[in-house]
Length: 174
Image (tube, rainbow, N blue to C red; front, side, top):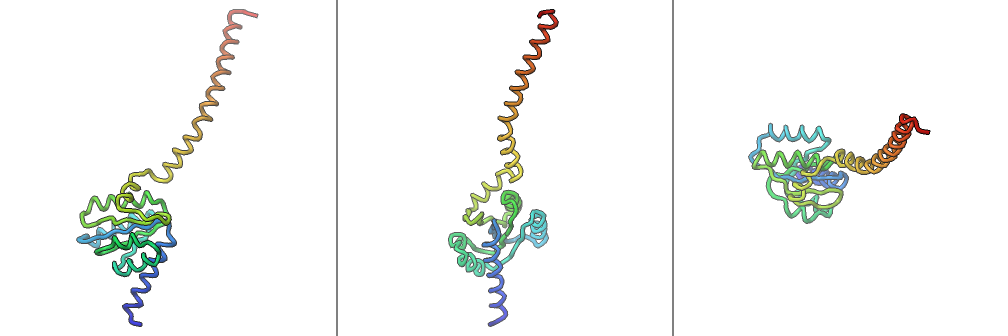
């Protein structure tokens, strides 16, 4: 087997492994973007625990087809990068959507989120969602609200009762 074939096979295996083992994958195409800008994107994504994998389109297409993501494989064209991560998909999508708005040659093609194929519009929608931590804190606040209101109501009734007793005692009542 030739060196080039071995190289393409190893890249296809790493793409396939990344797509199947990571909880979220985003596929982007880029052209006319300097390596310094791409390095900045990689650093931003690395801070969020995401990896950027560059691949030839044909190799990535084969790997995605082998991973049963035929619909995503059909959308691929041009220079290609895959962003693989197990961290919060909303945070990762925010970074890549912002980058695509800042640089015209960077286009979000779609992605995979927990096994479901996403279109580029769905990735944009995902980027508009709050982060997982914010959603969890809102959820906990929602759960806590009835308990807090109940405790306040009980406290108010006891406060009213104490106030009535105090007024009664100030009047010199029995």
